[in-house]
Length: 306
Image 1: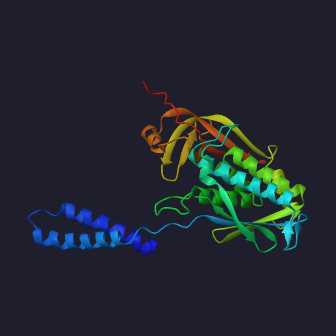
Image 2: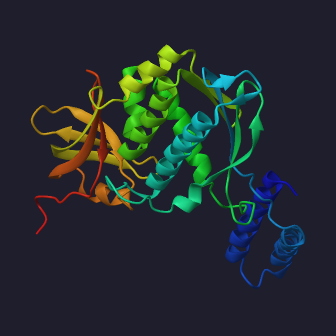
């Protein structure tokens, strides 16, 4: 049984249970028909274990001065570069459960460890796979490493995009993870190398070392500025699932939009206080002279609360 078939059976079981709950006990004929089908679905689910989700896998390859054709890569560069990339993924993953402290150990580091499982053909590099002690993911288990690899690829892509694209991506990434990526790219630039990252059937590549150097500059604190600030105004609405908000500024009447940070467990609580005056704490991210992106970092108080 594949994953789609298993999902269909789960959905059918839930629907049958819902229907049965609404059929009166005295309507035995109708109940018997639906109960028989429910029993059949239960037997199918019991006879086949839930399908397992594939582990996250990626290919990281290098080109440039440290790479000797398809034969090999200088060990010092290869180990440092792969370690710096893995450090980026680890920090991106750790920040999925909440903002990272500016210094200190990375929490839950073991949940996003990457294994080198093979060398990758096409220039020279490595096949990477998320580490799971059981060697597999449960059917309903999200891959933290997979989410982090996707976000890392998006951040890499944004370094060669527009200022708005970089600001959007950086605003969704913890500052320590952004700095870790800058360190990785600086290592590439210093060694006159480029990288290619393949994940989820999509490929990102730098075209040349100059593009890598420009990416390093764009991720520098002089160009990519993040600061904690406050905004005064009122919320117009929050989308809890998408974790986005609209906020009308008191001074100008301008409506700004932003993301709700991971530190806020229940964004929907804000919808109980729409159009109430408040001051909010946000992390503002700006690239160059572009417009800022905002991330709400804490649930605010409201002036009309007793």
